[in-house]
Structure formats: C-alpha cells, structure tokens
Image: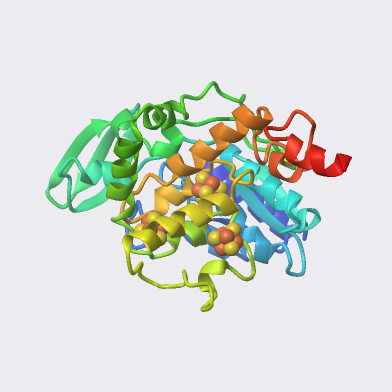
Amino acid sequence: MQEAMIKRAKELLADGSVKRVIGWKRGEFAYDITPAVFESAEELDKDFVFDDFTSANVSKYLVKESKKEGKVLVFLKPCDTYSLNQLTKEHRVDRDNIYVIGIPGGPKLDIEKIKAKGITGILSVKNDNYTLKIDTLYGEETMPFSEAILDKCASCKSKKHVTYDELIGEDGDVLDSDRFDMVEKLENMTAQERYDFWREQLSKCIRCNACRNVCPACTCEKCVFDNPNSGVENKAASDSFEENMFHIIRAFHVAGRCTDCGECSRVCPQNIPLHLLNRKFIKDINSLYGEYQAGADTTSRAPLTDYTADDCEASIVHERGAE
Ligand code: SF4
Ligand code: SF4
Ligand code: SF4
C-alpha cells in the first residue's frame, strides 16, 4: 500500500495536478509516526510512511494547507473523510483546492498497549499474520495484534469513505459499531458513581491542550481557552471546577459537530477517555433529535442548528413564534 501511495503522489506532483502532499513520516522511533507535508518526489522517497501506526487524522492540516496556492493531495482513511466533510460544511477548508485519495483504514496499533505488556527498548514492530513481532534492544517479543489495537479503531463506526476523488484499495461499509456500550454503562451508574468516574479521569488532566489542538472540530481562529478574559485560559487548572469546565465547555462547543474521530483520546498523554464525553452528546442528540452522524455529508443541517416541530422542547420556539 505504501508503495502505491508514493507512486500516485509522485505522479500527481509530476504532472502538476497537486503542489504538495499531506501524509505521515517516521519520527525518532519506528512507531513514532507524525503528520507531514511533502513537496517533492525526493521527500516522499525519503520520509513518507504508511503502516500500522499511521493513525493520526490529518484532515485538520487542510485548514491551512488548502488555503495555499495550488492543490494539496491528502491521503484519508475512512474515519478521516468524515472530518473533512465536517470541515467543508463549516467552510473551514477550500474543498476545491484539495485532492483526496481514500485509503484503507485500520485497525491501527497503540504503542502504549505494547509497552503496557512490559516490552521496552522497542526498535520495530511487524505484523506477521496478526501476530506482532517486536524487535527490541533485548531480543524479539511477540504478542497478538488484537491486544494492541487503538481504542478508536476497536470501536470503528465506518469503513466507508464519505468523500474522495479517487481510491486506492476497496471502499467499505458503515459498520454496526459497539461504540455506545461504555456510554450506556456510565448512564446506568448512579450520579455519584458517574461523578466519581469523571473526577478520577479529569483530575489527571495536565491541561496540555493536545485534545483541543488535534480536534478537527476545534478550528476556531479565536478559541475561548486562549482568551485571558475568559477565566478559563489557564495553562493548568487551578481547581477541580476548572478541571471539569475545560472539558464540559469543549464538549458543548463540538456537540453536533464531533464526528467521533477519536483523536482527542488518542493523543491524551494522561489516557483520559475523552471520547466518552463526546459520545454521550452524540447518543443524546441521536435520541432527542433523530439519528445524525456529523460529517456523513456536507449539506444536511445539524440538529443543533436546525429546528423542526418534532424537536425535544420544540414548544420553547413554538410558543414564542405563536405570540
Ligand atoms: S490531552 Fe489530556 S491531558 Fe491534555 S488537556 Fe486534553 S485531557 Fe488534558
Ligand atoms: S471531540 Fe474528539 S472525537 Fe470529536 S471530533 Fe474532536 S477529536 Fe474527534
Ligand atoms: S474549544 Fe471551543 S472555542 Fe476553542 S477551538 Fe474548540 S470549539 Fe473553538
């Protein structure tokens, strides 16, 4: 797959169809993959990588890259295409200046789950027929692929690309995901148990802002958390109220726009399951306003920016309108 992607990217660069390419490159370690922009065949040959660790959703980079002169080629996994649609709908990207090649999705691997097995000094990780062969400074280790799958891939909602200009590989289907199972468990807890669960999780937050910075729904040019007059712009939460509010405010801001891409949880250095908060909003929106998947298209009106007489508490607007 990697070779086919590099070959196609080089063709599109060579014939002038695109000016640059967004993909992934290896970091300091083989598993330490990071998004990157490539501008030449030489750069692609040297650094471009696509493997079991290329999990980052690169769609947010299009906010900046699509505004530059000349088309940008981007490789998007199925889940990432929902983010691009949502960004298109919100006029945050110039879709006409983007060439999307849809590529197969995961499941991708979580290096932390491999390290959690006590495996250290990792040099490389190879998938040998769904057994991981892990080369380390201390010899080779093995573990089942299934035990190292990223959480966001373990509850994948769709293998279908909702936008693309061409595909490499087959397109898939929307899946019957179990992604709301843990939300239901939380709903079934008592209020105190639920509060304790979230306090235990959110008290770990070091307010690094990685969740906000990676989130494709968080592209505001002026963010409330950067406003010194907001009272919530601290780089470290000063008390438990502020610790909670950072996450509650962000969850409200992305409600109805969060595509459930799972990036916030993936990048959190404290392993806080932030996606559960957003999934609770998604689940509630589904039940109160009808099934809705953010990013599934670029034209439908989102439940929270639309009004129908069937809405929950529709009478609030109804009565005012009738006066
Ligand atoms: S990524 Fe995690 S630690 Fe960082 S601000 Fe978000 S929740 Fe807090
Ligand atoms: S809140 Fe999390 S899951 Fe939702 S769009 Fe942002 S990064 Fe993705
Ligand atoms: S937290 Fe709110 S204000 Fe800040 S970028 Fe996200 S949506 Fe915008």
